[in-house]
Image 1 (cartoon, rainbow, N blue to C red):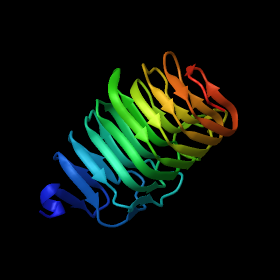
Image 2 (image 1 turned 135 degrees about the vertical axis):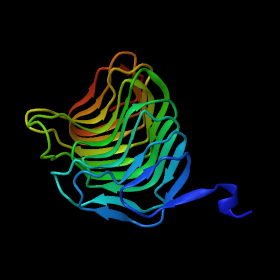
Image 3 (image 1 turned 45 degrees about the vertical axis):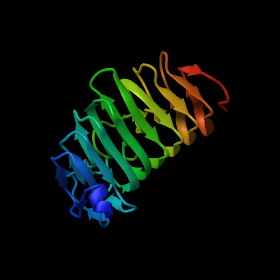
Length: 232
């Protein structure tokens, strides 16, 4: 059997693609735009896998863009992996998400408010953010003069945030930057991450736990949460 027979996949070759049918999708080339309002890919179906296939989504509009790299609202069982996302307001933005979200093996940089942002609508189990490199987040000219800026944001649910490297997250105005931000969560685990060059390295709350993490050049390395050891 061919790979296509084993795992039927649909190519993506156009910036501004909207996915409306469940299935497996892959990039065939880099997708670049100067559009300030259109997201590179919008997911409007459950049970979707996107393999960037080593290619990149790039927005070159600059700090005034309000476009996201990949966006989805009220979706479940979404996987995004294997490529680069650069130059967007938020690299990945999932709002009101449900179980089964996996973000892995991505390089997300030079985005202006968030690298990865996952915001479930309720206490949602079963999300993973792993083995990503998130760098140089901040600088948006959109919105309020004072804004918290976050490299990886996984809030209001239950996530495992593991094996990520986050560096250079700069707050806007009088507000701080956060490398990894998990707030209003239950049983979230932050494990074996590397965070550098930001105001707050890892910010947790309540019963969330962290271990085996390293921070460097963070004004406040760890904020709240339960320290399970071997963090420096």
